[in-house]
Length: 378
Image (tube, rainbow, N blue to C red; front, side, top):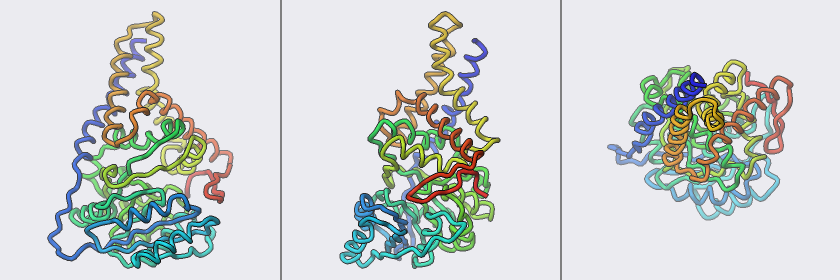
């Protein structure tokens, strides 16, 4: 028990220390400092499929963008609800808004990648800001992202929006996004090596590209098969020597990704095989996450039953929950998610193993009325 206890301490300490380092790196909010009196020309590009509940508020937020020359393009991807009508209403009141219709989905493409590629071909801006329909931009988001990319020579700048959660299912799933970034991504190293593909990180909800870099890399057509376009595009750009960066997205946008456990599970399964859920990576992630965030609870229970000292377990728990609390404050997530932390880790690993098993058995993943292979991307 002593060996297991101190192993738990080590596995909890590693992400806790990295979280402190990343907090310093990510908490420094970029402040636009432009010597060019001409405003940056940003195209906000929104793919939309059956987004009647979201597209109106998304457009309200995008239209409130400040400090940039702006156009807003929404491409309706075969919606069967009132998505297109809502966009037309906004376009009638604001000439910066345009509604486009997506052509039929070609074979070999993912729906979102196809629409994003078509949107980029219609955009006129020097900076392409792709956002999901459930994202609400802050008024200065487009300016902050584009100015940061311009000043630092980045082809891609991304951030994770502040994640809004209202149900138990969301609290058990969504917080893993920021926990993995803050606790397991070495942000200072990522920035020292901005073209190293192994350190690529991006969130598909909020992607700002310098137009020529996007085009040189082939745009979304280069990852046409992907359901995890943010990560895959960041890796793709870095392989071609184009620098990318990840900044704190919580002050720049909000997003409510899912409305419960079922939609969250299917949504994360859809992307998992392009991230953690590979035969080589997932056993390692399982060891790291179980050892650092679940094992301490088991060891504490055993210690209370007289099996070993409680000291290592308590120290590991302090590190694990302290790190989770720090991430929660930094990412502006609900405090109610903190007591659920060990369950969140177990649910996350269950989702990843579900994705790996589905891939091995050839089961399909359904999303937005379409079916996709659940195996790893080519």
